[in-house]
Image (tube, rainbow, N blue to C red):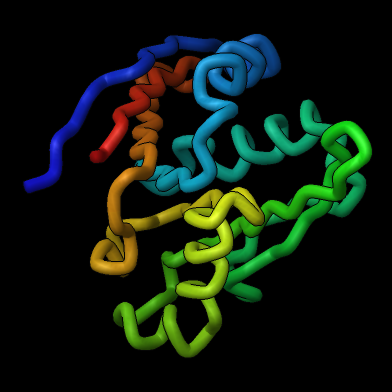
Length: 153
């Protein structure tokens, strides 16, 4: 039986998304597996772009809709850290995700070797084994968003 615990709720305007990103990361930086849910255009990729910018990712951060997985690197002290940014929107099922190597990325996050950001996690929910964070981004106004962060354990 999975349990949900709300960790954080943030409302932010798009012109102050950097402040929301900083608050978010301060609260959740110890987690490694993040499932971002929200309607098309809610701002999942935009939020992740700003988060990667804050982490000083050197790679170009873009939506992995067609590539399915983007790999980014950032320095954490003297260590090179890996972020896997996945977009499951186009997946037909979990088998397709496994064939694309997404299970390996999730395993790397569970082992602490990487961070996984997953957009459209609903497409292959069975790949997500607790604990992980479920982040819902809702459009409350054209330039306003509300983000809810829940720990699934």
